[in-house]
Image (cartoon, rainbow, N blue to C red):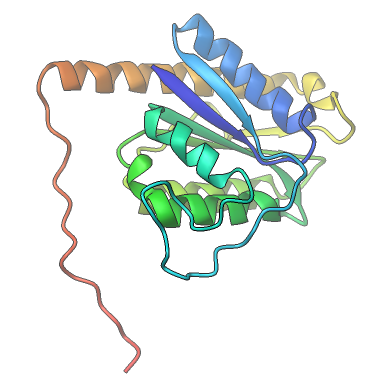
Length: 206
């Protein structure tokens, strides 16, 4: 089993990375593989609702979205990490996830997900809430911890000083591993995925 983690920061080894790494190390102790996927500092397109999605994902192939989607199809669980900018997730992770989920939502369905927010001080709860909305609309069970999944740090490496935040990351990993193992046991026992209805879509604008 493998958990795919997304670092939504342009800083590849900053505090968001350190927080995800803490999750990853705890997952490894549970026998779960992990990979931290870096969005990096290159430009990320917004979704423009063109409707030209394909089997490989988004029609635009000049950034890392489709590379991430290919990995998502093989992953068993997800952790999305974001730095907090103006009490909100980074714009780049929202643009990235909008296109990944809009074009390839099935790659995420019925797989557990968790969000992690990292800030100097405020805005973590709002950022955490925004990322969790991707899970709710995509039939993804949400993994919790012993506190909201947030870590504090401003300058690079400062997240390592937030001992409670890192504890929250480790507990998140333990809960993710437990959920993945339960799902695996369910599959082995022949329990099918839940039925999904799609026939009703209301349009209230007349």
